[in-house]
Image: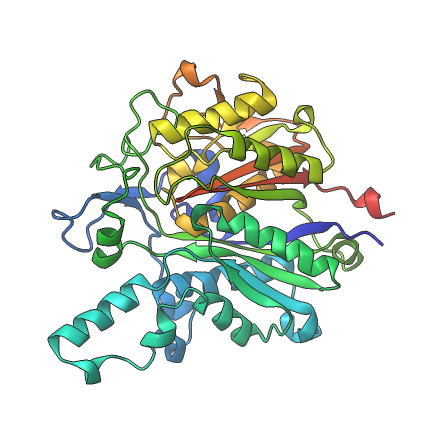
Length: 411
């Protein structure tokens, strides 16, 4: 019996749209969700634009009793989880609960909830602080609330590795399935756009201070100034391949291999070379039992910082050769979503394999010095495998290989 893990459901709540259809349509149209922050005064904050989820009304997705207990990032995760289950045609109420799990990635937690309670503490006193403060901000809150809501009683958890955490969570989901699990909800969302959250990000050297939504975030550009934050992310349903086909599920792609390394260099500054990022990519390819020539597209991390972009381009050049494989950074439409970024990239890659189209990078022209074939328009292609690269502040490196669906493999 095959232990292969496949993606059967994609739930997106992101600046590119809510729901996989709207998200994919806007992605191919190059419609960016990065716009000026206008819900509060940002004049004293380090950023003026961000990727924002438009028109999201939590009351349509979350019961009132949970709204008062949780933060916006958990609301987004609960919505994405429901969308992923519906997209997969998987009803947890009709499945053995001990076989169902949830694993999320988290980086910043419940920012707005925490800000509100800190303000209550200092303006009114300790008695004004909500009893839910102890759980509303907690980085594991989304995993816990999804598990409770859908009665997922298998192995559940959360991984923290900044922007790389989503790939690590996906590979943990594959491990759970290999041990006999029936299905895993995996992914992550973030909502780091409150004044408190942006103040916490203010010391990041890689943050762009640009005020023009069309030019603030331009990875691999000669005049890149950094990344911009964003909210949202994605949840995915991952199942054993044999089980997915047996129940007649649509399969987007197979999670074929993944790997993680760490620079172990500095808490903030990147290592001066790309060897550990390169090692993560090569290990992911080895675990997927494929070589560089088998990869048809790379979904790059695309920090938008010239030093980090140079290191990533060097790693891709070492593995694939200069310009040998198309590279795309569709998160130029969403901003950098911290732990929500890699799950969204995995969703993009799965959709690209399923539909045979590479989504574009927008508002950017690559500096030829990077040696990249950067995709800036939707590019139809015969896609067999996609590589997703993700990095996190402090030296986290992760890479995953997705392969096109192959029902014959289990026949």
